[in-house]
Amino acid sequence: MKLSLCMIVRDEAFFLRDCLAAAAPHVDEMVVVDTGSSDATPDIAREFGARLFHYTWHDDYAAARNFSLQQATGDWILVLDADELITAQDYRKLRELIADTEFDGFYLEQRNYTEEQRSTGWQPTPPDAPGRGFSGYTVNPILRLFRRRPDIHYQSPIHEIVDGTIAEGKRQRLDIPIHHYVDANPARPRAQRSLRYFELMEQALENAPDGRLFNIAASSAMYQTGDFRKAHEYYLQSARMGYEPARSLEGAAEASYRQGEFGVALDHYQQAYDSGHRSASMCLNMANIRVRLGERRRAIALLEEALAVGGLGPEVTDVIRKNITMLKQREGLA
Image (cartoon, rainbow, N blue to C red; front, side, top):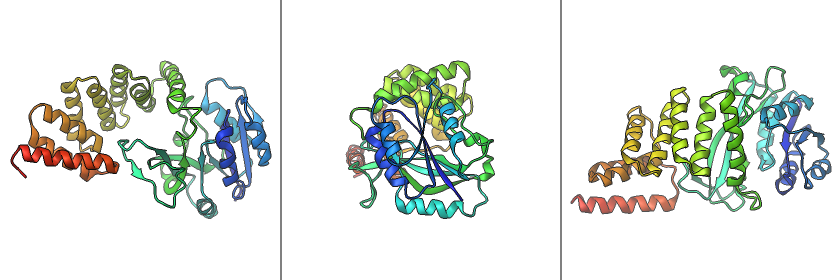
């Protein structure tokens, strides 16, 4: 089975060499679509023997991705960004997998390396992982390996996905990681990129409201622009449209929490909590609100639940344990 690597790039000289060097021995062709670089990105692509194409950018990631797919000749397509790579061992696993499978697409484990230990699902970087000095990462399952067929293509002009063009029963999740160094380039901070993505998301939402995109836009509004009211509005719209309602309600709650609207936040949190949804950060914020209300025993239970849910860094975990001890002492429980 022939495997094609497909990429869209622009001014990615900082990352591209590492990505292509890791891929070149293990894929049958590398298709690199440049959308207007002014640095050495095209030269690096040529250096590694990639098939280089130029594409006029018009604010549509799906269109650019689909153009790259149209240039591929392999039986299978692997999609990577320049700030990502896969190790040699895992490339071999992918090649073995596609040689004989009934599935049409595979979710890989995108590991987003970060120093933000309070990020949901944060876990420490294993000693043997190519973490590039980052202490930990979060995981995002992402469908990046799929058969080359005309009916499999990207959708959505921003935060594009192919998921909707592959039957659910023909998709499978793998534990093979894509190592993603989103914060590694100091010249291109994430906040700067996220603001541009946010503009494109709002344009897309005006034309075609979408629950998934409302959720992503809400996250950008909260963490990048600091517009908590808009984040609250977008998260609620995402929940109304049925996109991961409990997680969207948690997002709306956090937006209210960050504005100091603790009553509204608790209402949203409680609704998500009562549905069975749990996250460590949700339990932490609910505990803080309960302390404000003088409900220390309920706060203790929530802090203990946050530890049980896990996914927090060692520094945060240590603070939680100290707070539990302090609250128990005040309640005469220690």
